Length: 84
Image (cartoon, rainbow, N blue to C red; front, side, top):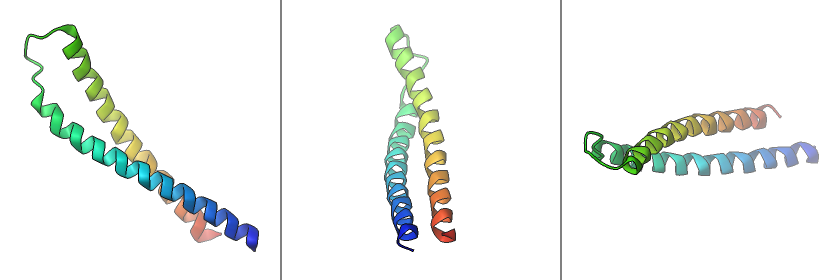
């Protein structure tokens, strides 16, 4: 019985960590989604500017994917807690 409680506690730690990272990614994504429309791709700028915009677009995808992964992890561990 104690072993069961210990694993539930560990699962809860992982849920808490994933919730923290989920919130961090959501906040970063919100800021990024505010920034991206402000950046003009049509401006004549140096290659670094264009590369930075491309990097930010890639980062947007990374945040979106991360958010889905963290949500999935939270659900997975919650189901394990509920069935233990």
